[in-house]
Length: 406
Image (cartoon, rainbow, N blue to C red; front, side, top):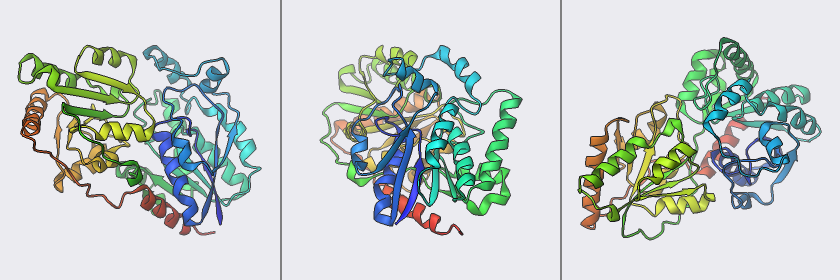
């Protein structure tokens, strides 16, 4: 059995997409002839914890190293739950060179070079992990596989500011893309962007999207109140204000009673949006839930909500999970990163995309769906992407690794 060193800063008990993707690969790799060895950091202060997710891979070999990055230092100082604040953004910008996890690199490198493995697989962000993978693969002469969960140079959540940072990141991105034996992107937009910048590496760049695991979807009984659900993080790039305005106006115009509609937010919410959501009596916030519980809570709704303010490099990791739920989907805002959903709608899945500022359009669609709900007409979709199960996507990863020339 081949040994794959899987390097991921994010790993349970941390929750969220950064942990979920490597966990699902790890779950299915042993059945495909690979022994995954996980290299991650020791406990950190973090905003989203999931003590259940790790149970899916209880038998995996996990190696945790020390780190001196800020999240680890906060944990050592006694903090367990970290809630991002807006005033911290400038501090993070100063440390964004290439990110503020860079001080994990020396500890991880020292540990990793003593491990016996056949391949190095690195998933990022944090993108400093790619630099770790580059030095490690060179030191031990093993093939490097890099997994872009987000765009690097164009990273939308903490953009690189200043020419020096852009030049530095561009230098490392080019070096790593050309050095890696295999480059995985989570989305076609990232792949196309990489190929446009580094055409010489085109033959090594492939897409493996985030998928869904049928084992996680046990569709519960629907509530009697018309329920809209959003699954994921709420922050600046996913500003919910216009969606909230649409629901508030429908209630104020007496087109729908406040007792007859419920809006659920499942996932981490930044404080300023938490305060705004709390002003709407029909809205409920759950915070970050264990993954399977979050899927169950989301699925026990009548309409799925997706929000984006329009960044080209906004790639919602939940697109296949939204489709697997069977819920009709309303999207507030347009983004090229939503093309999986957009294409599903074109193939007949019940879903609608509105410009971010089209409050009136969203209102009319919500009322239309509410009317169908009151008539007892259930609207259900069937995902056109049944091939995108986590198991099938892991098979694709193994197939691509098999093409690497020794």
